[in-house]
Length: 192
Image (cartoon, rainbow, N blue to C red; front, side):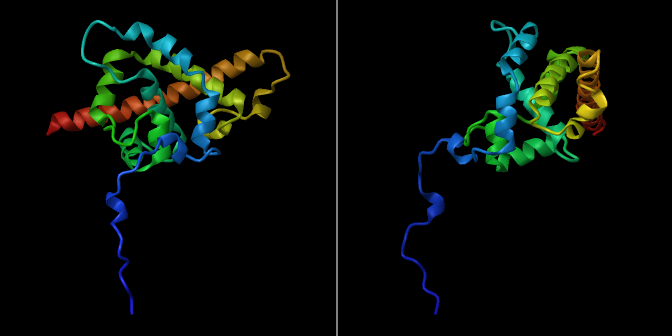
């Protein structure tokens, strides 16, 4: 005979917990967080934001983090990243939203990208992020869409230029993929 436990339903218990303690210390997103110089993202995005005008904007680091998740996850889109982040503590932590905070919608991310940044500026920001990740060896070069260290030949002359070119090309592919997805979503919405 099965007996039912005589206790409160654990799903309704109120607990105080910080999201940082729920994400494992060796999680890959923690390594990405540590490798990237996020202050440089804010410095590069500063000309596109105004503290005195308009509605509150999506944090530029959030936009970069979402693009980075789209790039590093197989067959991911902005929509799937945001959907998965609603269930994943690690993704929510990485993007920078607490448990009770509502994640931005796909259309909010789309308008934040299209209204604030031009493609070249966004590529420049992502190029710096990719370079940070590549040099820290946090993510494999192939998952970033870059050549391996053996192909770049670190000890050969012109390594820095080849690295910058590879980071730029990978950043262009990542940004253009996100922009294509968001433009297709916008066209589909207008057709309805």
